[in-house]
Every structure is written in C-alpha cells, then in structure tokens.
Amino acid sequence: MNQPQPVPAAIHLRDLSFTWPGQPHPALALDELRVEAREHVFISGPSGSGKSTLLAAIGGIIAPQSGSTEVLGQALQRLPAARRDQFRVDHIGFIFQQFNLLPYLSIIDNVLLPCQFSAYRKQRALQQGADLKQAAQSLLAALDLAPALWTRPVTQLSIGQQQRVAAARALIGRPEIIVADEPTSALDSDRQQAFLDLLQRECGHGDSALVFVSHDLRLAERFHRRIALEQINRTAAPEESA
Image (cartoon, rainbow, N blue to C red; front, side, top):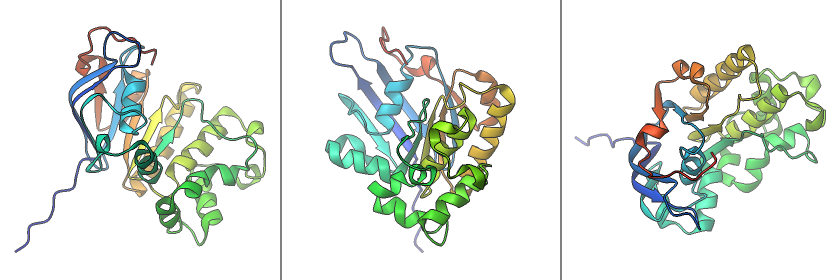
C-alpha cells in the first residue's frame, strides 16, 4: 500500500547566511526556520534584527551566500534570478508596508496585476470567479471594499481601503504563501483587528500560509506561533534598518 507523500513545509531555511555588499557582518544568520503549509506565523523583531532581509530571502529577491532556502519544496538558491522572480509571482503574495499600488491603474487592474505576470496565478484566479474581473470583485467584496469604491482612483482611497486593495492583490490566484510586511502600522487598534480578521479568513479559504511581520506584539496572539527574530538571528552586528 502506497504511503501518502509528506506535504513539504511552506518555508524551510537552514544554515542560512546573507551579508549585504559593503557590510562587515551578516544581516541574517539562521540555523533553521520552518513554517508549515497553512500555518499563520507572526514574526517580530526590533529595527536591525533582519526582518527585511528575511522576507527578501523567502521571496527569492536575494540569494544567501550560504545555506538552503526551500520554499514549497523548491531550493531557491539553485535557481537563476529570473526563475526565482517567476517562482515568487507564481506562489507568493506580498502585502507591502507602503502597499505599492499603481496610481495609473484602476482598482480592479491593481488587484489583477499578478495575473499579468503569472499564468499559474491567472489559472487559479479563474477558480475564484467566472472571469478575472469577477474574481477580483469577489475578493474586494470579501475584504469589505464596497462596489461604489471600485471605480475610484487608488489615490482617492483611505489608507485602510488601499490596504484592502493591496491584500486582494496578494490573495488573487490563491498563492500558497502570503507575506505581510508591517501592513497595519498606519491603522488604529480596531482597524488592525478588523483587517486581520479579513486577511486570516481569506488565507484560510485559500489554504495559504501567512507570514506576518509587525512591531505590534499585541497582534501576536492571533497567530499559531510567534517567532522573535532577534532570538534566532545569530548575526554578530546587524546593520540592516529593517
């Protein structure tokens, strides 16, 4: 009788070290960090603890000088830069601290941007609606962004509304991993909690692992596990302004 194959971890970093050019010490030096499929993990750490470097490694934006970076079972360090870029857009949805919405695109087109670069995300997005536009609209509605707002330029949206557009863009096509980099830093406590409710619900619907980076430790109790990066990053003298 065939045994079921084990599900690979969403993220598995081992013996990893990365030093930015011109810096005397590594910004990141980890023995091991593992995030399971569908796990929701809260990552905290003060400025200089390596948070930005960690997210860049997870996304394949940088290639560590040593160690292993496995994402969904794929060893990213073995891929050339262009293949890492494609892997990232196929499988990882990023919510940036500043949202990085494009003011010359409509709200719907901002949400659908990953589908322009990934046939894989486009195919999966079509499972979320009858067509791509409906898939984007369904996500925006699920994230409590009213249809009356969908025709506005993104520059006319509030911070909270822009945040939900950015979340919909990350979630379109149900990527296996969602990475959120300080997405609630500009929100008050009530709106932080409401946004987390929406984000975690949609990650659950898509069976996505969630890596959420924040300075606000009050949010940590909402997650399966908290990782204090300053406790596992062995770097001698962090130089990063994360």
